[in-house]
Image (tube, rainbow, N blue to C red; front, side, top):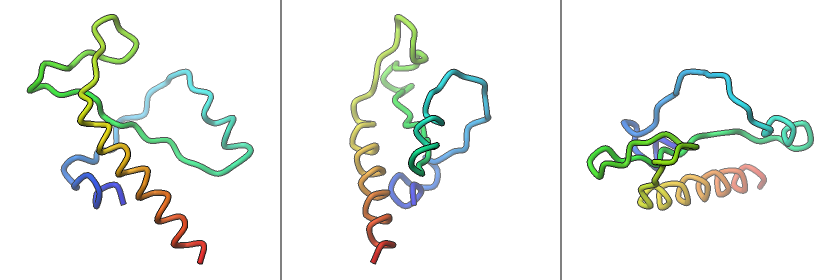
Length: 81
């Protein structure tokens, strides 16, 4: 579904890494999933990692994020029929 929204070349599975995240506690109550929305853009010089003083966001990613989450909701609702 994300490939349909963002294009296959733009959807990658990132390597697993240890991090501190409380999201799994929500999933004890309600099913869900976790995905990362890329917010950098090398062409614009936006390359810093999150949680650093240099962090910036390419706001164009917000359009992709809204399309992705809207598609998730519509797919879910379609399956509820």
